Amino acid sequence: MTDVAIAIRDLVVTYPPVHGGRPVHAVRGVSLDVQRGECVALVGESGCGKSSLARAALMLRPPDAGRITLTTPDGPRDLDRLTRGALRRARRHLQVVFQDPDASLDPRMTVATSVAAPLRVHGLRRDREDRVTALLDAVGLDPALGHRYPHELSGGQKQRVGIARALAPSPAVLILDEAVSALDVSLRAQILELLRDLQTRLDLAMLFITHDLSVVRSLAHRVAVMYLGSLMEVAPKATLLATPRHPYTRALLDAVPVPDPTLQATRIVTPLPGDPPSPDAVSPGCPFASRCPLREARCDTEKPELRTVADDTLVACHAISE
Ligand SMILES: Nc1ncnc2c1ncn2[C@@H]1O[C@H](COP(=O)(O)OP(=O)(O)OP(=O)(O)O)[C@@H](O)[C@H]1O
Ligand SMILES: [Mg+2]
Image 1 (cartoon, rainbow, N blue to C red):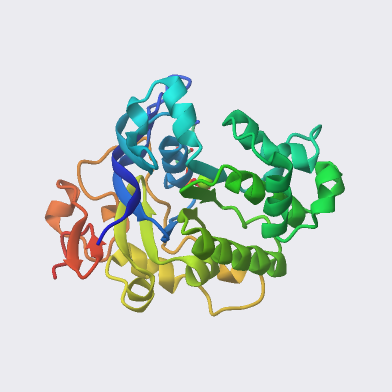
Image 2 (cartoon, rainbow, N blue to C red; image 1 turned 90 degrees about the vertical axis):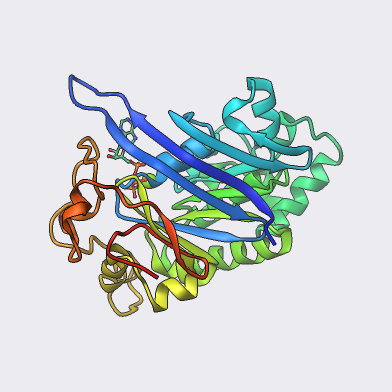
């Protein structure tokens, strides 16, 4: 049974060249679904295109090609085809939390005003004050903090406000781009706990972009592994952690040191010798070929498609069969 909340199909994001350089192929044809009540973690090295994918899915920077279909209470909506007004209405169901809460909170607005902003934008007038109180309570903040300004709050409190604000219009889908990365270890654990609780309670579909394997462990149902603008593997969390199939996924997991209470230790670090090829170079073959231990001749000329190799496991690799 499928209950798709957001479907991303063949998404392409290409940034135009700057200063006579070459265009940057940040996202090269990515397809990914998130179901209702499901958390998909999107992982990969810095610069592989995770935020570009997120911004395109949110239509903050519309994709150069591809389709984004959001399931709304009024039926499915292809976000990339909507008029501006219709997109604004559909956005109510698709919200985002970024890494830096300061970037999304207006320093001149009180917490309550910030949290109520999406309600105003979407014309949700009923019981607005009660709703703000309930939201602050839901994210573990004293509703009395509603009268404060962002500079009077701690980093963790601000991130909670950001989450309350994103939840205000009761979205079906929440995209989180490194939403806990700036927090220290204990705060991060608290916010993850909060997100897990909210996710189950509200049956949210979450796309959680992260560098942090502890986030994958605590929250994800499925994991999507991205490399140089393409998905290399998509699998249920337990399967991916126990039996990673793609050589890049294996390298990512091998690179994670034994759990240690320091921040660095739980992060996915650059797992392989050498850097990924620059995203302004386009090879017709597999993006991972230059660093891959399983490289074959056709890997340089033919891009492997993401295909099902086992139950719910998708892998893009010529060398891996069922
Ligand atoms: N607005 C932009 N204009 C031009 N190039 C960009 C722009 N935004 C990102 N890029 C480039 O696109 C590629 C993908 O960047 P993106 O920010 O999506 O990666 P990321 O996976 O989110 O990285 P990180 O983990 O560091 O946040 C990078 O090469 C980056 O330099
Ligand atoms: Mg990013």
